[in-house]
Image (tube, rainbow, N blue to C red; front, side, top):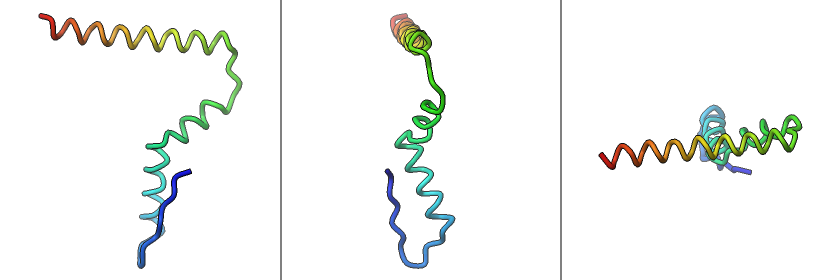
Length: 68
């Protein structure tokens, strides 16, 4: 859990903004959203396969761009 330490005369809004930024960097909110509903194992496999396919296509395009 990200922690934020308050300095003297620091406003609550500033602390909240810092905390939100640390949570975003730690990917806490995306992890919570991912686990809010049940995902069937077949859907998880499909999602992982599609992510790997997108990653490979991205690398392929990147290599083609540099090998001209």
